[in-house]
Image (cartoon, rainbow, N blue to C red; front, side):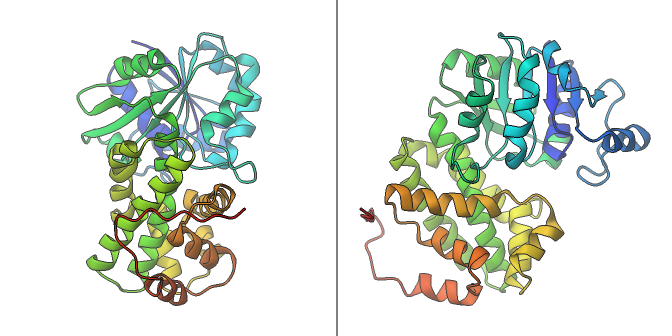
Length: 336
């Protein structure tokens, strides 16, 4: 059994804590907010982020970030916009042999970097493993069968995470394509926002199927341009994560999109739903596409809706009115 410290008491961090505790691991969970710790201690659950899931008293809750120094494995289970800040605070306490696992799915605003790149900059002496795939916190915590992917630059560390964290409800596969795994998990949030917008506008299965299919096409197009492998986007961190995020009401990206499709402003939708990773990721993905010269029409229209006042109806008309193409055509845009 291993010693884990999980950074973040949000839904996914706590769901992993519950799962790991159930299978005999020693688990500590950190939060920057003492009130959050007090509430969970009093209620036995996080009523806001993971209601109905009991947090065992065997799980240690702390606001002392130095506890990462006692762990064999440290899991980042916090929103992507906070990862650099928390990593910077935690870095002085890491032992060199501690394996760092990131579960956040997104791109850093401004730098456009993947989260493993951010962690490598802030915690340069420790191995980084990405854990990604279709894994709603609510279902992981309840022990529903879930499959995800572990990926790292050095396969021995993803193998290690696979061997330690896998159990009869949580199956981990290995994928050597860390770039593709991270980009698939991040960019699907953009398409999930769009899927929610379509739902909010009252469209049906035909529209969502088209959106998801063309969405994974442009995700793969950008991913391959940035060094990922085409086949990764047909796997759990690509189409698998896309399916679950576009179709489930557990998805905050989809729920925010539904509100936007019904006429709520993007800013208000995000405020109502909470953490919506696809909101910032849309801007970053669009900027990345422009930087490397890749055509991403769905992402481009989503960016215009979220940040430039374009109506969802106009965005849909723009997509449906694009020049006719062969389905298998790969479109590259030369921006030089």
